Structure formats: structure tokens, C-alpha cells
Image (cartoon, rainbow, N blue to C red):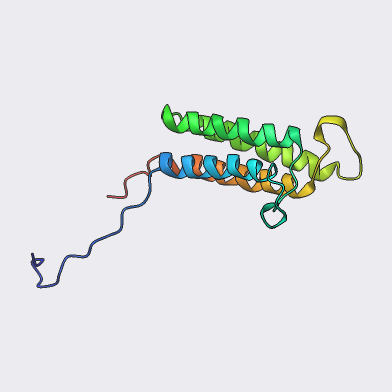
Length: 131
């Protein structure tokens, strides 16, 4: 059907909901930890130790739970913890401090996924009307 001014209506693509985006990032976060278990060199992208792997999988589960329960604040919590854990590891790179020890590649991965979860939390709230 034509618009009143004679032009065809424009179909705007629908954006993914914050819940879908959160589930995608949570899935990739957990999947990245599982890649460390594979002993096949081309798939061994990032060296993740046991503590880092548990942290990635646990916080991915928390973010997925936040999406399932429609509680975006859980994405903020999971993202903030990932960012802090990654930055602590990067700052203490020269030392090997018990639980924080591990790959700096995994630390960068945690900061990246944490930033993605925080960004999804920021965009989960509706924008104010400009009308």
C-alpha cells in the first residue's frame, strides 16, 4: 500500500531485544571458556585457567539468568565483575597472585565481554520520548 505522498512505505529492520543480545553475549562468554578445554590447537584461541574459566561460565550464567528473569541489573553485575577481574589481572601481570594468576589473553577477554554486558545493560532501558 502506498503512503499518502505517493511513496512506498519504508520497512525498518527490527532490532534485537536486550534480552536476546544479553543471551548471545552470555553464550559466547561461556563458549569462550569451553574452548580452553579443547586440546586442538586451531581452536585453542585463548589460554584460560580453571579459575578464569569458572568465572567466565559462572558470570555468563548470571547474565543469562538476568535475561530470563527480565532483570537487566544482573547483566550489570556480571559485566562489572568481569571487568574488575580482568583489569586486576592485567594490572598485576608481573606478579603471580594465587587466584588472579593466569593468562592476560583471558583477562582481555573478560574485560571485553564485561564491557559488552554493561553496554547491553545501558541500552536495556527505554529511551525518553522526544515527541
